[in-house]
Amino acid sequence: MEAAVNGYADLAIVNGSVVTMAGGDSAASAVAVTGGTITAVGSDQVRALIGPATRIVDAVGGAVLPGINDGHLHFIASAMVGFGYLRVGADAANSWDEIFRIIEKAEPGADGWIRAHGWDEVTIGTRPGALLDCRPGVPVVAFDQTGHQLMANRTAMERAGINDATLEPAGGVIVRGRRGEPTGLFQDGAMELVSRALPAIPSATLRRAALSMQARLHSQGITSLTEPGLGPASAGLLDGSGSTAALELLGDLAATGELTMRMNVLLLFAGTGGVSSAAVAAGLESGLAASFTGRDIDPKLLRIAGVKVFADGIPRSGTAWMSEPYGDACTHGSLVVKGGSEAERLAELDRILRLIDAAGLQAGIHATGDAATEAAVGALLDGTRNGDNRHYIIHGAFSTEGTLDRMAAAGIGYSTNPLIRAMAGDVMRTLLGESRFARHQPLHSALAAGVHLNLASDAPVASTDWRRTVVAAVERSTPSRAASSADPERITGLQALAAMTVQPAWQDHAEGFKGTLLPGMAADLCLLEGEWPSDENINRLLTTDVLMTISNGRVVHDRLDA
Image (cartoon, rainbow, N blue to C red):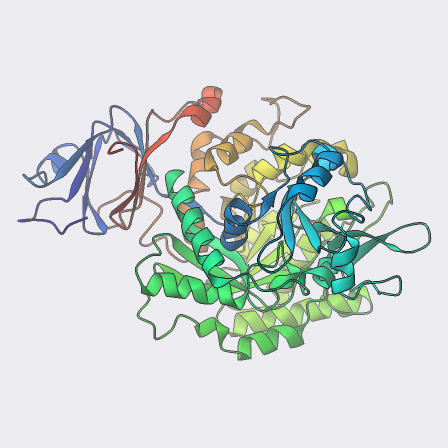
């Protein structure tokens, strides 16, 4: 967008319904943008800034929102899943036999491997050994939708040196047959055994996928995100693509002006099993936290925010740490932090969080069990001192509201994923039982306690379409259970929107320049083709298209000019 001429705005959106998210919204109908800044919100105020060179956008009553900020979106993994891997999700295959046939027909990549993604046990079940005999001589790996499981064929396991004698790593599961032989199914920390054998993704492939994903996100109205886990331990997270090379790529894109998505990055120094204070200390000493320093990169565009820490796994793998037993195995799970006993693991978690806090960085702590959440919160309260770092819990489960009260008092944030709950709710209800599942993701309670709550996709685990996340937070339905107005943890549509604009801006230490539509704030906007729906009709949001997205004053998606 060109600079303003004679004090006039570059662009003015008029005849809209402006949702400022600043509290006490009036009937504002217009927004003016000059350079990268919002220069007026209102009607007469905007009209006064319209000059002969100003682009005027008629919103025709559509909602004008702050740019959407997804506070937990694996950008690099989503890019590879969307634009780099063989698709075997529900949109492509409805059974293991179909997945087998798809892989049989696929051409290996330039590195000789076949990499697939998307199978989901919720829809097709888990069949250990399903891919063992697929494509003999060609290594095959298929990542599941959650990013916590993968399937490998015999050739891939041979390349990785995995056999009957291979031991399970901390926090991981090698699913075995009756004789103790690996079936090709690896969960959580055990995924690294295969992922570390994968050749590096070619830089050109990674770059092409990243730019394609950025365009897709902008088409959905997204202008900011947190990339929760890039670094040397990438083999232990999702598909393993979030390497230091991916971190360097983001810096290169920012330096050349090709990055138009605001990104906060969490570094990953250990994967889903066996995180230790030694690994975190080494990572902090490596200098990765200063990757973008001295490169003339605007920290409002791209910055290292903190460190991702896995406290436990997930319920479906039996690796979430719960205070009460769950699942068919009646397991409690445990912390996946290094240590030979619960006391040692708790002490190690405390040391890890002290290190991150002392470095002036933010800790994003993955905790899916209530015991893991309470341990992480307890460690933050006892082991750290700087509330300004804005540490937060990712996913989270709570046995009582007391933990939420302590989080609010200490300024500990909470980032969770309503769409995942909606998609996998029936499985989770079976694993946890009705009572615990009813308390799963206590959105209303968190807001009532004063916790800084944000809602995120956790893509590629769930869709990046934020509209689906908002609907899931308002309805709290599952595949077999319709929405119920009696659910005490439902929130309103505007509360959900705040949790995808204002609240993640707080998580990003950026509420001073983004998340609201006010004069002087960054010009990050999303224009919908229709008005914001009432809570009773929140499903209308799913068919309300994004007409325009503006990021830092730059039009990055424009259906009006198509």
